[in-house]
Amino acid sequence: MQEGCWGREYRAACRALTRRVGCTLALPVEPLCLRSATELAAMIRAGDVSSREVVDAHIRHVERVDPSLRAVVRDRFAAARREADAADERRAREPADALPAF
Image (tube, rainbow, N blue to C red; front, side, top):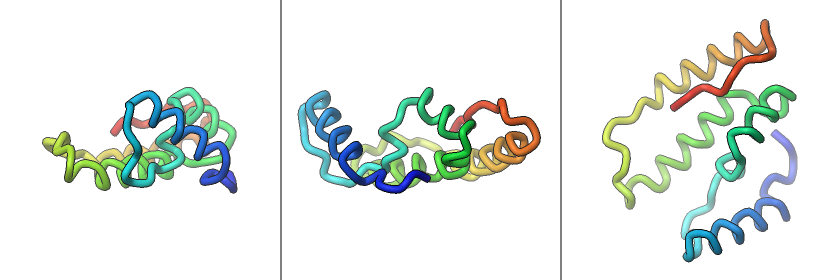
């Protein structure tokens, strides 16, 4: 993953998100969770991050916020991790792979 992801760009994204939702973020947000799907796909294709890193970041975020939101009825985190690993293996052979879903 790129160094400095918790730096200026991260803080700017947090400020923008705070303005958009109208409240401050009580919990730190994973930097990868602030990226669009298009940005994440480009980062995966460039080899900056793996599908597994993206999925793990989103899972950590869900695990951090869900106790207060209670939005996840049934997780499929294990399956998402397996799919991310499979996507990374396919990408190693065939670089034009898509993002896994979780």
